[in-house]
Length: 138
Image (tube, rainbow, N blue to C red; front, top):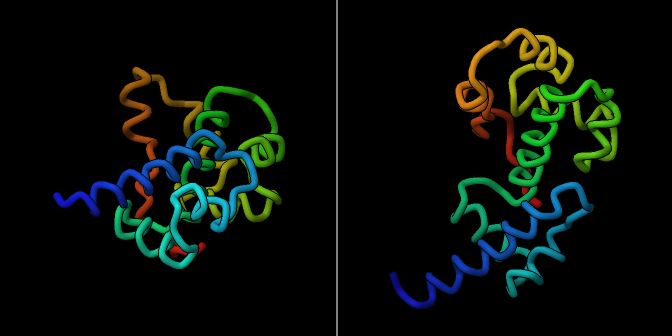
């Protein structure tokens, strides 16, 4: 691997790590591109080439993963969970959750409440694949 490729990968990892740490915060492409030290357009292209999805979709998926945990492990309202994980509206949250997971947050909560298996199996079975839905750029 060339030094330039290694440096690009490090920059993309730096931005992805920032997304992982602050997934519930309002993150935008300009801020993430600054973290990666590249232009906005270049950031979107390289992030997608490196990780297989746009920065926007990655952030949505991270938020949905956290929401899945909260839906399984707490009795908090779906609206509270929506805002806690960084979505701006319950409608956007529900639509994105359904695109990624394949069912609504309410249905997901009902179905996972009945699962009585070791946590490692439940996590593997319920992990979103990130392959459904359309990708957004940004």
